[in-house]
Image (cartoon, rainbow, N blue to C red; front, side, top):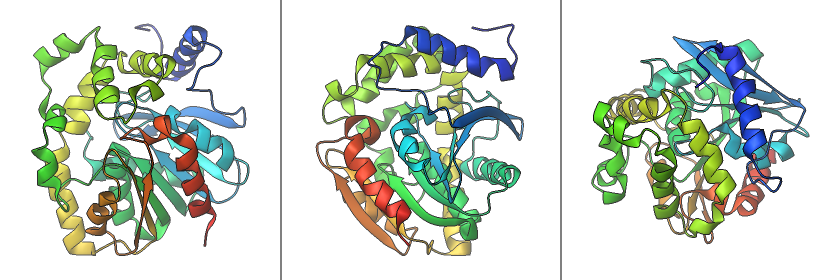
Amino acid sequence: MFPSLSRDALAPAMLALLAISAPAEAEVKPFPSSFQASQMPVSGGTLYVRVGGQGPAVLLLHGFGDTGDMWEPLAELLVKDHMVIVPDLRGMGLSSHPDAGYEKVAQARDLAAILDKLGVHHIDLVTHDIGNMVGYALAAQYPARVTKWAVMDAPLPGIGHWNDQLENPKTWHFNFRGPDVERLVAGRERILLDRFYNDMSANPAAIDEQTRNHYAALYSLPGAIHDAFSGQFAAFDQDARDNQALLVNRGKLTMPVLAIGGDHSYGSKLAIEVGFAAANVQAAVIRDSGHWIMEEQPKQAIDLLVPFIAGD
């Protein structure tokens, strides 16, 4: 797909394709016109980064099954009085697809370099799923830069009861990779994503057809499934070792942390897991939600996140 386009041309072309195919009532909406998006250089490739607004900076990190697009409802509110930074993670969404660099500490260093280029010294951090893992690596390596952290519905490799997570039948996909797997998934990305949306939600109907098709198109891009499974997921073992070393060498995070879990997923237990890595953790639970909090119950999430970010 788009074999003749450069990386800089890929993003607007893909967004135009998605806009044409999306119905008027689409739940995944374009970011406000105040946002500018660009491919920003990082080690071995580029990250597609949306930036909008002025004021205190907020960095929003997505996970697997989503891209930075998941944050649009929150970003639309925050941009009124914040600088909002929303990347697509390495090898995901409209970012480039390098072969290496998927360790979360390495991705965090790339994000720190992007913040430097944007002239941002301090951020509030909001993360979900794999974004939690990159977010922890960022906060642990650069604690003075992260003012507060809201973490949503996924644990941290190597910390707390991570080994229980590895034995959970629902996470068989952590080791679902390799060339034959990619051949099986090719052209069936929507079927694969439906498995995650259906099994890990409280109400699958809350994740509508437009949302599913939107992300299926992005995860159908060349290299996207490979980079998710053989990049992001395959790095978990090294991430676990890196996280344990960060915790031993640097101690627990001290900034305020809000741990948000869906009541059909991690719920209040997420605060316990994050509490192994952070000393000042507050728990919050989203009602009638599984893992996909921003798709299933965006208003509840926003009603928690906006006051947390605004607070001292």
